[in-house]
Length: 599
Ligand code: G6P
Image (cartoon, rainbow, N blue to C red; front, side):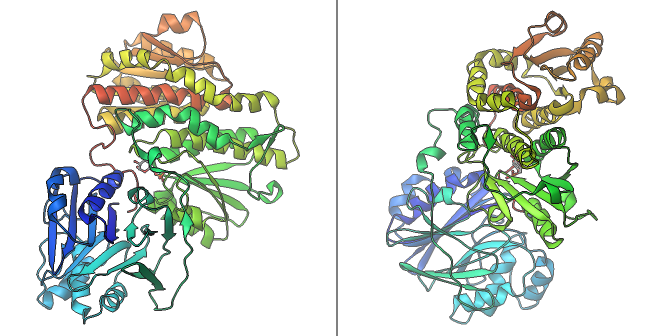
């Protein structure tokens, strides 16, 4: 994953890189480093830990360079330590490089370079690149980088500088890279979040682009040496949206932003009882829908299956992108492949998209980050407009994805010639209000978090359209609180997990009104009979629920199709408060990263 950043200009280089890197930490935070060209010297600082632990602000005024590169790491090759941290440098300590991606043939390249007497310090794949560039360097950095990259297999977003020149050479294949065009200064970054404070004008590089950035100007070519033109885009969001705004964590802020993010995803998309989407979907030529995604996005994909099959009646398959891309998946020309990704950069999801396109399927992206690689490569797409999501555990993007899948189902139904159900449309429009009601009950959820925060295991059970919500509730808890949690279809519990139930086991039930409500009640009975501690999320003022449950979390009444969105909110808050009460770093859970740009 990793985040990379470069700066060339008259600003305070070290502090610009430091601040920008902090905004990229959602991409990885196990080690970090910065190199600044200070006249003919290079100031280099790098180590295990976050940039705030490594680089103290007292240094800002002491380092006066106008060119620098920076990196925040999520380890792939080699443990997080000083040697493995970026920037990496060549044998003469003249060329410095930051890299995001994976060099697949690094072992072969390393052997070749070792035979030529290059000395390696780290265990990383990235260090190979800087020595390879050194091998080809003959007073022209761009040429050396191009020659080196011609031998590389794998993915890269990289920035290279040479001690002698005030220039950056940057290149991209498979990892995101953008140029930020400021007033006289130029930025390079994995993500706009790092440079939004300074400029809103960005250029998204394409795969196999190489660019040379010099004072106040840049030139872009492809790796075959032809000039290419890449447009300047204007970023529509601002810094305010990526600040914590008084919340203790980004995750909590993003949970509380859901009334707004849900309004945004709905804005202009339901009008006069019709769904308005600017996508071209002809149901008559549609034989099957495949939805592919990773992580939390995969959970919304599963909810999408329930929705589309119920509302439209077209078969839907849901696949982990990491499996879909490598197995002999059957993809036909009449299939619609929906690609779900908050970041629009997840490596496996991108590969699944490319595979689908190469087999002639129609592709549709549901993406949050505007201008991301997936959003640019799909045939058509729908943006979530949820605003930047910084907390590693996805919350507001998840609920917006589910709403979007619901809108798509209704859009297809409408295109089949049906009139849409008014009650359902009104329920969708009332979502922001209903979510607000749950958020106002945060304190009730916090009390339950206090009671259960020391448990070692949790079980989440749901049925039908709320089974994926059980999976998502369990994922939220395990990723930020490190408590082992499993989500299961409630009836499947009898085929295994029921053996785990004793009086130490908290079991969260999703028991809102719907086709399987009575069935869920029986499942609650089964857990109760074995002494499990029952926490029930429900919208029914039902005596039996009260009698059977140890704790009840009430949510506003809605209809079944909407319930996954409503029901996931208390589960987000429960996971958040348990992790926070345990004193954990909720926004930066160990070993995880927000944007998984490696496979
Ligand atoms: C990582 C994040 C998850 C996210 C998943 C897929 O694992 O930590 O929050 O759901 O990647 O990311 P995407 O950006 O493709 O939705």
